[in-house]
Amino acid sequence: MKRQAIIPVETLSACITQMPERAVRKLLGLLAGEELTVVRGPLTGLVMMSALDSFQADFYLGEVLVTEAEVTYGECRGYGMVIGDDPERAIARASVEAVGASRNRILQERVQRFLSAEANKIEFRRKKGASLIARTRVDFETMKRT
Figure 1: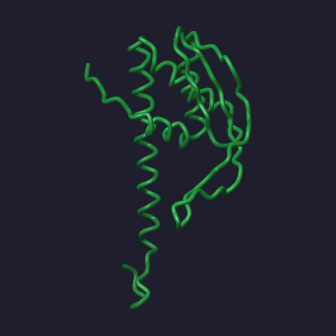
Figure 2: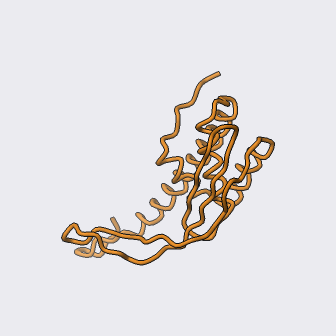
Figure 3: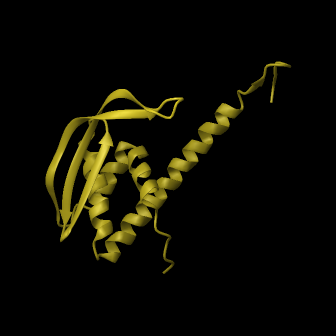
């Protein structure tokens, strides 16, 4: 059996954040038979969002609604926070983190395959959207499409 590369945590987080709702539900279904326990949440709250201004100083844009959850899988804990009121996505994020920290390699590989497939779908949709946008690009000096 070919072993797949481990998805970096940043990609994993982005993947779960960008997956459609049906994929999140499918991921939760994949984990349904496992001994996952929701320890805290899902809870909604506000987090201050900041950005760097032109002088490289923090500029506070305002508060952002987030949903957070904490789960356990065996001895391992997982924490997930997502933007918006999305309890299923927060639980999915926390569950994947807990499973990733566990010793259950079979489940980790199953989750890895699922997330890799979803990451590929997300990348395909991104490239398709970028190509559609690129076709509308105009050179304003000649007013011709490039």
